[in-house]
Length: 54
Image (cartoon, rainbow, N blue to C red; front, side):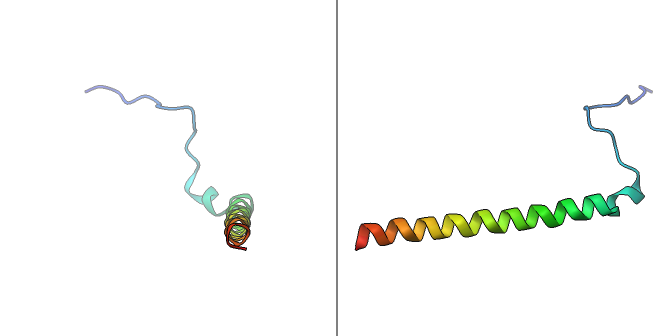
């Protein structure tokens, strides 16, 4: 039977490390940035439409 070696460059995290403070902060920051980008795009799109129509 063939031995399975490591595949890829990313090391697997221990199961307990998934809920550490750093990971939770990264998820929170990712959500904030996503909301900010989507809001900015919606405002920009509305401004372009308003400029074309007015």
